[in-house]
Image (cartoon, rainbow over all chains, first blue to last red):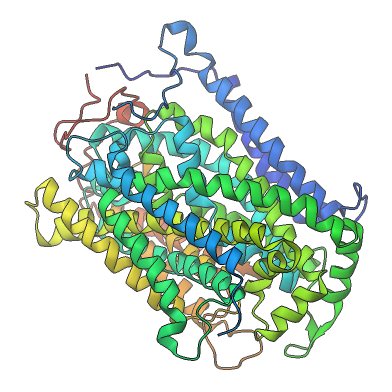
Length: 91
Length: 544
C-alpha cells in the first residue's frame, strides 16, 4: 500500500495558488466592471468577449495552480501517475 | 400529427439505439468481479483516470441546462442568461480547492456519498439524513430539466404531437424506460461510456452551428443588433422591456449571485460528487479542473445560439406558434438552418446530452437513498449486494419523481428547475465543505442552519410568481433581499451560516456532545493507488 504523501509547501506557494484562483472569482463576479458594450472585439460587445476570454484564462490559472501544487512532489520520488486510461485495464 | 422529417427522425433513432446498446454493453467494460458491489455499480469501481473522468464530469455538468435552458433564457431576456458563463468559469477554481480533500477522505473510508462523509465526520446520522434528503430532492428537478429538454426536441420534430396525452408523451416515456433499464443493469459505467458518444455529437454540433449559422444570418454584428432591438421591445405582460444586451445596474447583483450560487452548488449535487469519487487518483481531479473549461467554452457558444435564434425570423415565428415556448428556440434554429440529416445529428446531441446526465443523477440519488436512509434507518445489516439491489430499484423511483416535477412546475423557463435544485442543494455546503477543513461547527447547529435555510429558500421560491401570472408559484429563483435582487440560494446560504455559527457557539458553551469523528487529519490528504476492494469503513485501506 502506498504512503499518503503529506505535502509541505512554503507559504509563498500557497499564496500564489490562492491568488491564481481568486483572480478568476474577482474577474468574473465584479459585474459593474464589464457591464458595458464597448470596446467591441470584432462584432462582439465587451460584455460578451470579456467573459468568454475568461474561459481559457481560468484553464491556464488552474493548470498553473496544479503545477505549483505538484512542484514539491516530483523530486521526492513519488510515482507520477502515468496515462492510465486505456479501457480494458482493471483496477 | 404534423409531418415528421423522416431523415432527421431516422438519424435520431439510430443514434439512440447506438447509445442504448453502448449503455447495456458498458456493464462489461473494465469488467468487475461482482457488479453487485456498491462501489462497482455506483462508482464504476472508482477506477476512472483523467481522460474518462473528463468525459464523465463533462457529461455530468453540461446537460439540457446547457443546450436548452440557457439559450432559452438568453433568447427571452438577453444578458441575464449569460450568467451561466461566469458560473462555469468560477466553478473550477472553487472545486480545485476542496474536491481533492473530499476524494481522499472518501477513498480512505470507502464513503460512496457525501452523506456518508458527513455521517463519519460528525458522528451524526441526523445530519447525514439531512444531506441525503436534500440531495435526492434537489436532483429531481434537475432530472426534470433533462426531460423538458428532450420534450423540446421531440416537439420541434413533430413527434408525439397528437391530441391524446398518452400518445403525446409516449416517445419521452420510451426514451426514459430505456434509459432506466441500462442504468439499472450497468450502473455508472453506462453514462461513462455513453458520454463519449454524447460529447462527440455535441462538439460537432456546436462547432458547425456557431461557424455556419451566423454567416447565413448576416454575421454577428447583425445578430447582436437585431437581438438588441427585440429585447428593447416592451413585454405586454409586465410593462417592461423583455431584456437587454448588457446587464442593467439593477440586475448586477442577481447576475453575480446567480453565478456564484450556481458555482458553489454544482459540486454539492450528488451526481457531481459521484463523478469526483469515481476517479482513480487524487491528481485526476485537479488536472481535470484545468481541462474541463473546454466545456465552458461550449456552454458559452451554445448560450450565444440564443441570440442567433432570436435574429432568425423563422425561429421567432415558430416559438410564437408554440405558445411562446422559448425552450424550442435552439431546436427550431437547427430545423430551419440545417439540412435534415445534420438537424438529426443536432437533435440527437441534445437528446443524448440529456439522457447521460439523467442516468448519473439517478444513480447518485439512488446511492444516497440506499446508504444514508435505507441502511441507516431501515436495515443496518444490509449486505453490499442487498444495498446494490435497493439502489438499482431506487434509481427507477427517482426518475418517476423527476417526471412529477417536470409535469407540475411551470415550463416558462426550464432553467428554474435547475435553479430551484440549487437553492436546496447549496444548503449542504456548510456541512460538507466546512467539514473538510474543520470540526468547529457543532452537528446540531449545522442541522438547524440547514433547516432554517431550507424553509426560507423554499418559501421565497414559492412566493415568486410566474411572469405575468398572478397567484402562481415557483416562477423564478431570484428575490429582493436588503434592497438588491439576489439568487435565493445565496441569501439562504447566508442565513444557514449565521444560524450555524451562532448555535455552534451556544452548543459549545453548553457542552452538548459533539459526536465522534472517525476521520483523521491524514485521511484528507491520502492518495492510495488502489481502490479499497470491498473494504468496509472500519478497515480503511489508506492507512499504512
